[in-house]
Image (cartoon, rainbow, N blue to C red):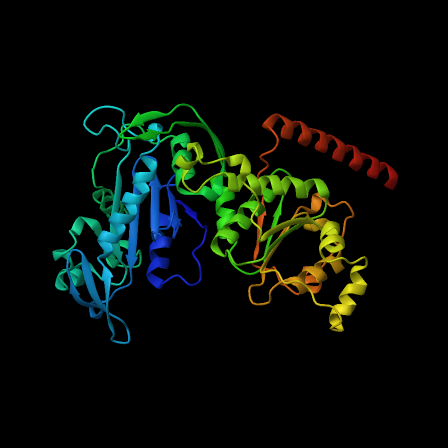
Length: 457
């Protein structure tokens, strides 16, 4: 089963996109990564597939039917909408090809990702491809509609080739069709390494970058080829979590060191980028964490959209600042300095009597939620824009200072059932530390059990 990012497809996806998403997830190998609608420097391909032994493929998905087609050429198509209106669109194959070229152009800037000698010198060391998926048309229907006249068959996947419920479907045939889509078809002698795949992700997705070091630069055709090392990115699990959070209210629970705060900061950056007009508030319990979050968000903004900008004369990463529409506060700082109040309960009462007006935030992200009091959540929920309902709550109840027991439904008005995620992986400690801690816990737990038995005798 392939890794899909996000983990599940959004509710607004078309039925054809859902079928393709499920099929790629179920039938591709475990070490393949499938991105659905990733935003890459101004373009948004429908799917990108990265396979260690395959390379990279960009897919454009169309839910066209036979009635959709009116007239088409190799460059431009005239299609008919469901209402019967005609409008012009780019040939989807050309759209997929152009998107792949933009992706390749970014990746060819890194010396570690290109071939340094031979026939394909300065080209990617791994193959790349592109193609179109017609999710509602069979091979026969595509042939009858003469689509193959303007798009070569090897660059097309039809409904019967992607739908496991179709009687002629074959997973092996689907994978072989993907292999045929490569512009320069060649098999990798050695699979892409974990570091090489991380480098690809680093270039394509600025929101997951945590840092990298330049090893050296190589002049080539009036530009510098970069060579990055010690690349730090969110891992696939963390990236998936940040991009899967979705809209409206969400809850993340995680153990210490699982990257909860990192995901929260990355989520704030993605929201600010997607909605530059939003007013975004990040709240936490203690002062030191608020400072860490500010530094984390600042570091993320220090990573430019285009990696090559990092090393230009005009770019100064140290000058990166948190955007004006993103506010990071600990709770006491927020309600005493920003709201200028001393008693939360009295303030809420005045709001309910319409004697006070609260500021509105389009998104609120809360860290250390386990230490927030019930009336704090009440105040926060009153400040949240009811049209967006974008609330992200992050907590670890094992780290609760006060051991608060609560009902989020009662305190915030939001039901988090079915809208929560759990992070179980600890990235902060080594295996040796975790093993020692576990041995200590088991020993201590056994001692407690023995003492309890003695007391009951």
